[in-house]
Each structure stands twice: as structure tokens, then as C-alpha cells.
Length: 238
Image (cartoon, rainbow, N blue to C red; front, top):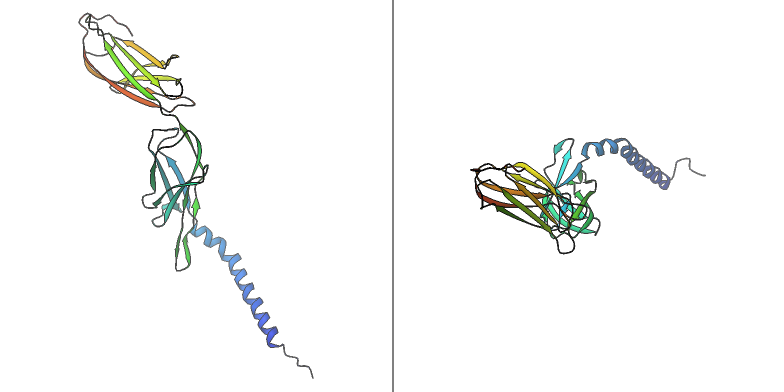
């Protein structure tokens, strides 16, 4: 006589189906809420962009969980263009400094490790959007100043020479005295920008020249000291 009760195998299979079904149900219902609760956001900034080959570039990540900085975990910085690991930092001080970069555009990304405690995901891993770091050749800039010693008219000639081994940079140079812009000049074919003025106040001055860079060369700057400017017989030339 056949029994009307299910066999042990049938009961076991039914139990497994119910168990897996419960797990799937819990996963479908609670997983989105759990993921939203532990979701982090990672951003990445660079101290220079464009950056020069001579620059020491600082990469700084920022990791937040619902707008609050995350206090545990690590951040890895990757050059995805070359598939290089650039460095690792604790999320409490998520910065690294890199140097010796070669010219070109690189995709840099920061990846946060996340935090797990007792097999529970407290803060989920996240990656920043790629930072396209434009690396350009760093030129040399030489700055000289000549004061007209033949007459007391305050006439000063300032020359900036911007050069690189491979080529002559183009673009413009801004001259400053005491933080105040006194002129902006374009570089000529030899990489020079010359500025002649008698508008400086009497006394001594620190003249700065800031090269703004171009598509192939990074910005650069230099300074020169000018002493003894006098306007006893001034002829205005600006």
C-alpha cells in the first residue's frame, strides 16, 4: 500500500526550495536599502592640471558616505592609461605626491577599498570618475633686468627667455611688480618677451614673470631683483 505522506527526500527538497526562496526574497527586499545605506562617493583632484614634467603633482581623493567623510579604509590611485598603481593612502589622509611624469594625457582614478566589519559591509567600495591629467613639457624661464644707468629716468628693460630642449615655446608672459601686473607680452620666435618701462616707483623691486604655457608646454615662472630705480629726470615710457 502506497503511503499518502511525502517522502523524506521530498520534504528535504521542499525545505531547500523554501530556504533559497526566503534568501532571494530577503535579498530582493533588503539589498537595495542596504546598498543605499552603505554607498560611498569618491572624488579626485590634482594640484596641477595641466601639469609640467618638472612638477611634483599632489593627487587628493575625497570619500564621503551621505555627505560625511569616511574615516576608515584605504584609497588606491591608478594611472589607467598605463595600468600603473601610483600609490596607496589611508582615507584619513588621502593624498599622494607623484613626479617624473612624461608628456601626454593620462586617466587617473582613485579607488576606495570599503569597510567590512563582522562580514557586514559598513561602507561600500567606490571609484572616482577618471581625472584626465594633461602633462606637458616644463620649460626653463630666465629673467633679466637692465636699468639705464646713463640717466636718472627710471628706465628699466626686463627680458624673459622661455626655452626647452626640444622646441621653442609659444604664448605670452605676464610681468608683475609687487604682485601688480605691469605688462603682458607675447613671446617672439626665439622664445623672448621684452618689456621696457619707466613706470616703476623709486627704490628696489622684485620683478616676476609668469609664462602661461601653450598646448605643448606647461606654465613656468621666474623672478629678478631690480635695485636703485630713480626718477630724478624722468621721461615717461610705458
